Length: 299
Image 1 (tube, rainbow, N blue to C red):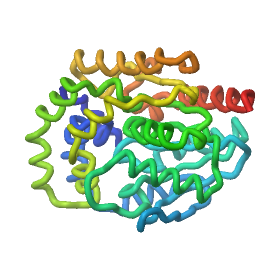
Image 2 (cartoon, one colour; image 1 turned 120 degrees about the vertical axis):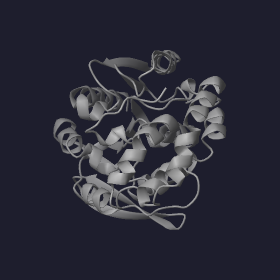
Image 3 (cartoon, rainbow, N blue to C red; image 1 turned 90 degrees about the vertical axis):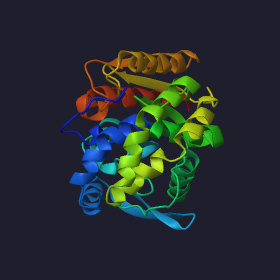
Image 4 (cartoon, rainbow, N blue to C red; image 1 turned 45 degrees about the vertical axis):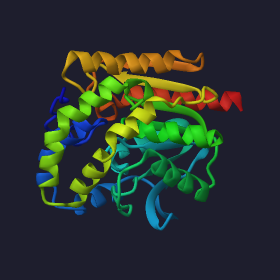
């Protein structure tokens, strides 16, 4: 049940589940020197840099000026704002919207925060950034792990989000007790091996995201996202997994979420790996354009 290796992709290292975090992460950590690469990648993201403080740490937000609604791009697990380096300026051109990318704590140019990674803390960081930038009613685009951040933000502050585009996102429906237990058990050895690796910034982030994975995701499974926010759900053809059972469950969870409300739409990105922003940026940008138009029409 280990996700397929995508040898030349950064998302091969860190996708959405504990299995993906450790499977690619072990190799990727050995290749990473430390923070320099991600910081340079983050600096390459389009837009002016704003360092915004929250709970004693600073977060890097990149802003391309434009009109309402702002489009907020949230990268997959272990990735930073540079994931959107091609999509962000294109979206500004195509929609006229302000486009915001950012680095979650411990990624890119943002400060590290010790302790287990928690979606609620990441949502607090994103909320702080949007507050400082004066953003409300945004179109939130969330890839992979960022789906958990989106769920927390919409549940706690739905006025911040006028529409969501969930790109092969980590959704509550996937994490049944049985599936979560299987992921944790299958990867216990790899987590132990990762703890024995040199503790670089990347290994610390991997371990932070693996810590408390089981309890956190059993609790996440019991959450639901308010249907007041319209959502487009984009599912990849390959999913993060090689095993047919896990891939079926992943796709079923995406369809279940999309089917739970009349203002949600399911789109299949065929063909595509889990790294849809890289493989099919056209699908992502069209979905975002459509959501921006919808939000403006509903204003």
